[in-house]
Length: 90
Image (tube, rainbow, N blue to C red):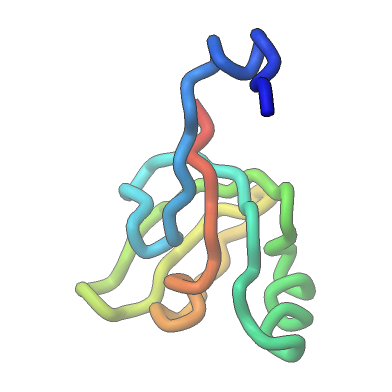
């Protein structure tokens, strides 16, 4: 299978979890890798696939992660944050 020319010249952006995202970095949500109920809860907070977010802070190594989502600060637990995959926005 041939890769189109334009795809070969673009740098590959890897996906990482919200817990791996550095404080202050902006990213786009790729996947909400959680159960149905958790996905509904995240969506009610404005955390959707394709949504641009910025990580504001993390409290401790396994504490909540604070995000900026549409000018609102949202805190989510570490367990849920590590299931959310993002792509760093440059």
